[in-house]
Image (tube, rainbow, N blue to C red; front, side):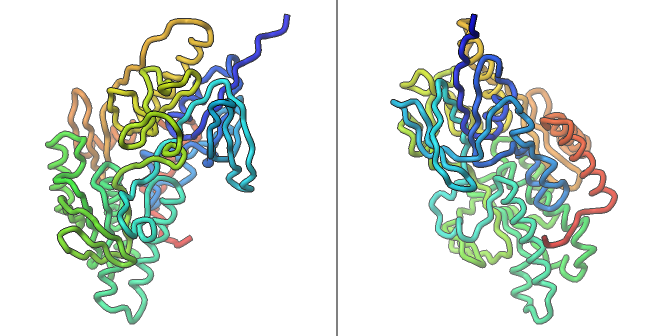
Length: 412
């Protein structure tokens, strides 16, 4: 008797939600195809550490092809979904060739992109921190600023500008980058550029009246005090209205010269998510039911940052996306086998953030921690969440070599 034909499942994306689904999906039940312009999964919580060389870029990525060997993968981006024909139109990321993929079930997990809020000059002059190539650009620019400032004939005013590192956005990513930049300066750059180190300034701009607004109030205050004792100026209530090539203009008229500007203010929809004819909220997130089925469809699901369960507002974090991907993998299997399913329930494990100098924050349900011991917990927690033994060993080795030999300051 011939075996029953497997349902054709197409997954768009390679972030936490899509990757967790691909790792958990039953390939004996589904014929799975993944499509993403990025052929690897990126462990984004440690991305700020790569900007200064605390850990290597390849230590926090996991190739999709080897991580999910039973999943067919295409290095392409989806440009259109044909709802009537039940196929997706894709374009190769390298050769730009178009092709179509039929689906029985479709999962949209394309994530979000950095949000510029329409502010002039951000895309042209600011550097984002969403992917490895962003971190590589930031790392290269840091070294360029120091090397330029060290050249003979540079005026004091120009030197001050080049050595001013501005972070726009006081969320966890912005705070962690500022902390990593402080460590890089104190532990490595002061020795390599002793004459320049006293002229370095790090400024953190936040439009709201506080940084880390999702953290406990006491932990926010602790971080602000800690930054004030270092070379990190925290300016809250500072709304950026324009970014020029060498300066940032605030709404109050203040002009801030800079050598490097990192934009980390929030996330917005991808072109695909914006264009899809599905019900969305004001932030263009696709509305779903509690099983992640897109409203008005029977065979399309949406998970991760690009989606929102109607009536709920989960934070756009890695742990939320990861839980959604795992849930949907189990849900689809049970539905395929005709079993009953329960709705998605999010379990909050708390939030962690590195604040520099061997100190971190932990905002957990039953524990609010800070300092050195919390930093050890932060490192161990992230180490256990890395998806493969290879990544765990690489990150451990990177931390060890950085501690012994310092960070590399070469411009590559």
